[in-house]
Length: 149
View 1 (cartoon, rainbow, N blue to C red):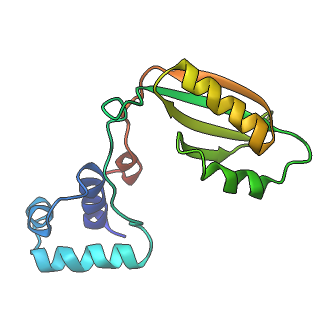
View 2 (view 1 turned 135 degrees about the vertical axis):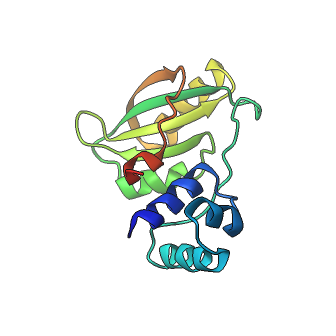
C-alpha cells in the first residue's frame, strides 16, 4: 500500500460515497486507475464495506450508554453473543480483558428503557453484573488518522 492508496482510504473514510472522478482529482489519477486501486483494496480486505452513519438522536435514541458486563460463571460466551442479536438497542459489543467480560454500546430513548434492557440481559442472557456510564459526546478522531496521510 503506497501513499496514494492511503490518500484514497482517508478520503473514503470521510466520504464513502465519493465518486471515482472526485477521488481521481484528489490524487491526480484517472477515474479508471482509481477504480482499479479501490477494487484491489476491497479484494485484499482493506476496505470491508461502506455504511451510512445514522443520527441516533433523530431516530429517538438520544442516550448512548457504555455498559461493562460480567457474565455468570456458567454462561456460554458464544450463546451470550448470539443472544445480543435479539437486543437491537445494543449496537456494538466487545469482549474485553480485565474485570469485566464485555463492553456494550447501548442506545436508548431514556433511563427507563435502559433499565428494561439491563433487566433483560440479566434474565435472558446470564449477565451477573452491569456497570453503565452515560456517553456525553464522542470525540470525532476518525479511523483515517492511522493512515498517516
